[in-house]
Length: 137
Length: 137
DNA sequence: CTCTGTGCAAAGCGTTTGCAAACGA
DNA sequence: TCGTTTGCAAACGCTTTGCACAGAG
Image 1 (spheres, protein in one colour):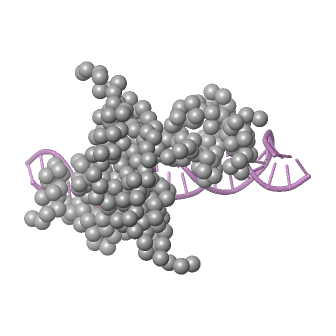
Image 2 (tube, rainbow over the protein chains, first blue to last red):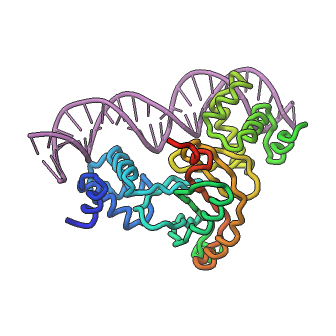
Image 3 (spheres, each protein chain N blue to C red):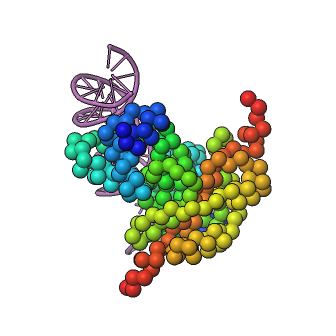
């Protein structure tokens, strides 16, 4: 029984080979969109259906195993849920980096000023990464 | 010539009554999704088409007059572009509040650590507003 | 007058659903 | 064995497109 089998079961779902491979693929990519995931999955399961991808992404998102990251001007990507972090997106090469960041301060200031009980913080920073910035046109 | 007429023209688009009313409606709501906007627009232009709404929202977004706010678990809402701010979303009543916030500090820390040139910051905080928190079940 | 925008209908796409067979626990 | 999941095909819903006419500048 591998890690993903256990993880999936802990989230009250059956550990099918397709689900294990989805997690494996997402983990390798860090973040992946539906199309790319489908493409990768077909290499392992040639007859897998897009419906299966959607059903599993939805099931695992509802069971808090996956998280959808909504990006400006791009398709959403999915990641395995871990500690809170922001996302740094390069508009040139598409690379997405996780940024360890403590939202506590931001949340505290805002929650106090606005009498709000915050339970989720989504922060996406878009721009140009160092590699792309170095390229002289 | 009203304000919106001028604004629209400044963004290199023709100021049609439909566009003026779209801006008017979005301004009144602060943030509005496509369906609600269509509903409101039909009160003023009974034969307006949903295609017109989409074409205009897209045109005005591309011309940096409108901005799409992507929300977790909800349809996107649109707002008139103004100074940078974060969004506070109540998961109970759906209310969306703008929060004046200076992203400079966050951006500076991240940009330095990650060698990134940031040009857009999207921050959405979700939770429960004071009104909804006060309601005893 | 010219070019852009509107409204309608149709097309296009991404996502979901229903169902029978396969599979996990 | 029983309930869940898979894969397929069809349905669905949101968004875009093409076109003829109307309207802005």
